[in-house]
Amino acid sequence: MGRLLPLTWRDIASQINNHPRHPDRPHTEGVVQFGEVRINLLTMEVYRSSQLLTFAAMEFKTLKFFVQNPFRVLSRDELLNEVWGYEAHAS
Image (tube, rainbow, N blue to C red; front, top):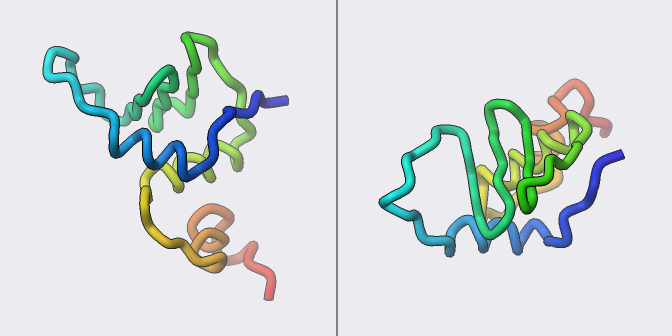
């Protein structure tokens, strides 16, 4: 079972956009970091306070979609199509 982050999707998006980038840190492609949370989009690993959190594949895919689309209004159809795939979309 995965651990839940005590943040809402809005909190995550806000932290990503409001957290200043540190020029002294090397850029790591595919890694999003804010506060104590670090998400590696390439390896599908999420850490909070250096502790690895476990997510199911679809949970991670949903997290990744929200992180990559901060401050966007997303429709239900867009979320279903992008995360679950069009063929899984029930009418």
